[in-house]
Image (cartoon, rainbow, N blue to C red):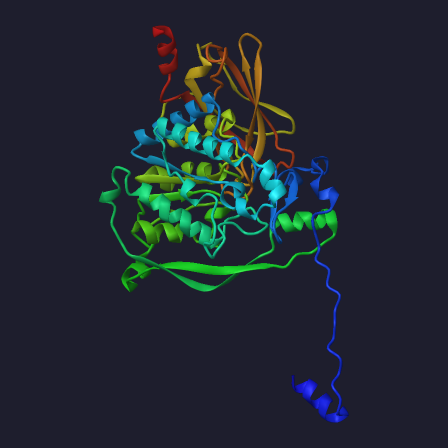
Length: 463
């Protein structure tokens, strides 16, 4: 305005108002909407982008899915995990995140909204919640958050798979209501917490970035309010999780439970109890849980309530996950009689670690046993084990954890216990050296009985 006034004063005539030709980018280019182009592990997470209103983008596979829950076997294994935790005095609660399509359906174009079967998706989500509850698992029905309109702050970012802090807050408010119903909650020390805005959180959405790789376009960064939660009284603030602190509620989960979105803080505010946040960003749905179960802290001071947060698209029927998680609940072979035990320095290739019959041939029914491994170098996050049986059959079992977690080099797993495997007699265990094997890498392997040894065998006999 000052410059315009000076120019007017100098010339005595008004300058013409400037005009700019602005063309809005979109909708998505055809390449980004072609599922065949999502041909890498990373890109497959975004299959396939579709245009929403404004800058909103959605993924057809994950955001607009209509199937939820897991298989009957998956629910059975989930219950087995729940029962093992409960035997340790730990109540298991899950936060089963709704999809972006269920919550932000109003941001779809009319065309995409017509293609998305919202009614079926909602029904199947609610069925999954009911099935988790039948398995004895505490879970919050988050359907009151579905199809949000005129709330002022979006639950999800326009083009990112994470919830906003506002979405985390609304979720935590409902989750806290369920948390307060769990037996033992009333015995946990109550405190008051306050959440305050501490700045802005910028988000260059992962869906926007993916669209840019296909279409060469760019999008504006979205900014939302960032929050931080603190105890109301200064004394609690100074001692929170300090020396002598032993939180009775622990949270394991994904990057949605990371500090950026303040989910654990909002949980504290709405529940009034300390929450120990052990979430792992970029580790999938299982890494944080497996890391916590393998920690000495869990075994020395197990929480009364374990909250597990994850998205709906994860495969909850992965038998390899349960085979690793269940032994860790009871600390693997620590404190249990070792049936076989050996430590060797690994050489490149296959390494024979345990052999049945080296001193005398034992009956080692696979369904009754588990293996506990410790690598001398904690940076080992991937290896392969081969289990041989007396009838000549073998199984290759991949030992793998995210490099985002500290395993201490320790892994545990049950011998195979599905279909016709449980009654096979174990012959040997081989460990294949990691691809990038550290120098002088050794492994200690222990075979011991599972805590539930013979339980399924006796049940089958009674039938």
